[in-house]
Image (cartoon, rainbow, N blue to C red; front, side, top):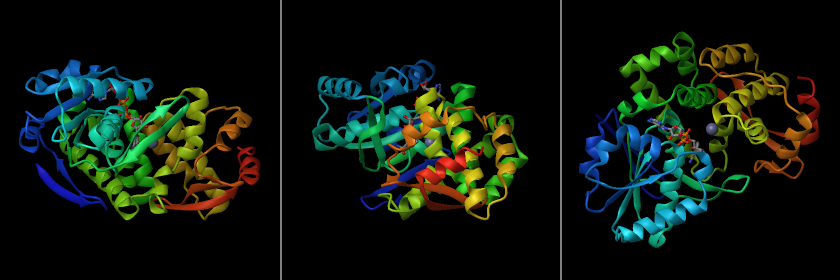
Length: 339
Ligand SMILES: NC(=O)c1ccc[n+]([C@@H]2O[C@H](COP(=O)([O-])OP(=O)(O)OC[C@H]3O[C@@H](n4cnc5c(N)ncnc54)[C@H](O)[C@@H]3O)[C@@H](O)[C@H]2O)c1
Ligand SMILES: [Zn+2]
């Protein structure tokens, strides 16, 4: 096991990489802890939680909503949870987002930690302290920024992770490589999904490297003034088509990254779109999709990254080097119409 701490503005978060779930007993007093997980994870791994009070949620993004938070609060009351209670989210990003949010508001805030068990939660969702829920069509509209006490990584949970969720996780890993880490990009080019699913050491290193990339970006800019925006690479176009076409997040982001690369070819010195396309395809991700661009632009005009008629778009200057550029929406529309 490898212990590292990252210091965010409000607190230090301890990361336990390459660890075993059993370490949780040393991190949290079982009489104070309440585990929050979902049915899929409980089904495959529930025996590990036998001595913990547990709240099991229905899985899926559609349950990342206020009524689920209400039911968590009710179950916490039933368990007699007080200000000294400690919530542990054992799950994918839906569970970790909702656990961090519930912990931030229960009795005006109790402690919490995460055991991320989807690849996406390990490298992305559980890191950075943004916790929240969806409201109607608006993703993550209500939430808080509050860091967990710890992140505990036990890759044995990944044995039960469905293939499509591996692919989703790799979209964010490729994103990290594109914006920050040309060496990681090359490593990914040399390997493939099958390799990482079979080689436990390589997978652990990959997870650790990606968790560190995200953590460093967040530490530099916890409240999203600049640097943290780079993590939105692929997500502007991605979110707009995800909402309209009900795509898995990773697929939408992959298509969004290709769009951002194409725009980069026009607006920066970038010239490596084909390499990005090849890498995404190697990891089972789509790179293109016929969409009704008018409909997509209706969503883009509502984007949080929009300021007046401009949108802050994350582009690549090179593999491993992202930049943000203000683009006029009308110009964006005319560029996109060429693709
Ligand atoms: N807070 C942030 O900074 C941040 C960043 C990125 C994403 N997110 C959020 O994360 C969510 C997506 O996360 P996700 O992809 O992990 O989704 P998820 O939590 O819905 O998990 C995906 C599916 O895989 C199942 N699953 C997860 N781990 C498993 C395991 N080990 N074994 C068997 N089944 C398993 C889940 O039950 C679910 O059906 C979104 O809600 C997104 O908004 C948050
Ligand atoms: Zn994402």
